[in-house]
Length: 321
Ligand code: ACO
Image (cartoon, rainbow, N blue to C red; front, side, top):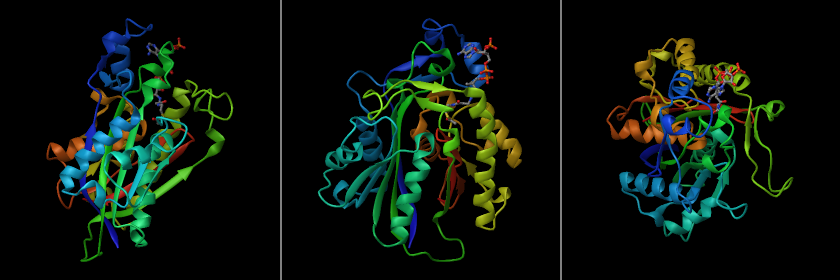
């Protein structure tokens, strides 16, 4: 079996927070943020608007595009580091909202790499024949764990949700479609480089984000390039075979450096940073949904999704759309 992507969708909060507005909250400026990160604005969830709301909105949009009804889904994997509640998993809220009474749903925690980790889990379950139709979602309300007084981190993040629907299909032909391979890594020695200073077990609070931006930057450019090359080599392909790279959206300069390392023009890289900011696990599916909706990603395109996040976690997926 192979996992074909048969639909994708997204959901964003209404509220836009511009750099200019941020400059009234902390000592920063539109120029600094734009120059250092490429971000112009990000979306912020309203009070009472939770990660599950964004996940459900994205899931419904993806199912609509796929022409599949909620009860026909066997698996929901939701990647998030900002769950509605400590327990149960936010994914079961999505399951209930979609009218699913069968199958199973759970959350995955790999921070910014969560979507690729979730995609890998769902893909492997489909390959094994355990699941036929899977919803893979990345959804976050990063605004809830940001220290809004810390200019080092509060300018970087946004809220949102994105989802893809995977369907089991018999692998056929010499150019099979679907997820070709996934590659996952973590290195816990770097767990403190981006972390929250709290948690259920330690402080009984979610905590606020602390981040060593420059350190993250240096590791990100190396790890993203390594995971990208690995996916190409594993499939006997080169960068010339790629139609699109849809990387995790952390910083435009990180993405540019990745483009240089892979010797790919920026025109082949999907960037949504300017209007989404870094939405953690939601960033890749949000960008995929946008590039499919505007006609950039088409059937049979080869799409690479390198990612890197807190943990450190990193990896990639190579997908024939
Ligand atoms: N406005 C104005 N000045 C600022 C701001 C701000 N918002 N933030 C930091 N500064 C100042 C710093 O205090 C520092 O001042 P100093 O020299 O007087 O100490 C100066 O700007 C330079 O700071 P640097 O950290 O060296 O700036 P850098 O060019 O590295 O950019 C940034 C910082 C944007 C965070 C960058 O390192 C980055 O994007 N890192 C990776 C992204 C990241 O950490 N993402 C977190 C999620 S993980 C992931 O998604 C991969």
